[in-house]
Image (cartoon, rainbow over all chains, first blue to last red; front, side):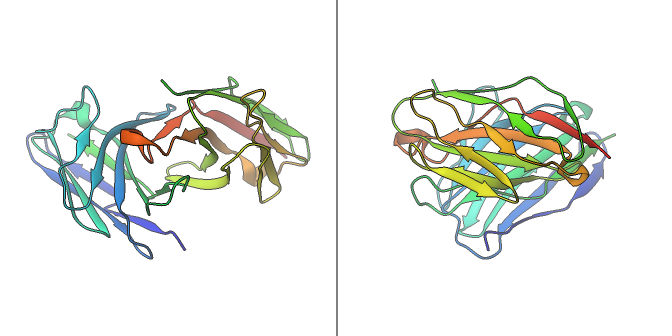
Length: 116
Length: 115
């Protein structure tokens, strides 16, 4: 149980284009999903928190117009990197939580984005 | 604010050695504590958790005890294997208010186990 998938696992795009990453909770309803960014050999940096049916809450310093998050259902959240640039190249990881106090977050396998 | 401090890595051990990765935290209230493991090129997997003081989380031979008096959640394993080589993250979650469900991570500890 508690499986989270991400798609795609890897994507290469050209500078200036947009890329959409999907995050799905496969066997539970996720009241809240989180999006992280991870640089090589570093910890995870929380980008935003999204709750189903409402606007995402972005962490300080994260551009909401560049990183568009949509949490359309209790099992799906998407992150769209708009007008991507090489500095957006990173490992993006989503996680989901079912809503119980003290519950663990369950993480997706991550998406490696390379912008050329 | 909440914070998590892990022992500096990397940690290099021989197979069957004893492992300890220290983790201490600062938090208000009564957080839940977690250990996550990340294998190369993958997302994080929950290794174990504890939700209240004196709870012991355990999984795959790993253990950690929630010590409120020392604000610690040290990870231990009696005999490591090569397959345990990964990055280990200690994390806490405070269930209250606007930070509900958000994890605060330590910096991660790289473990390498040699045959």
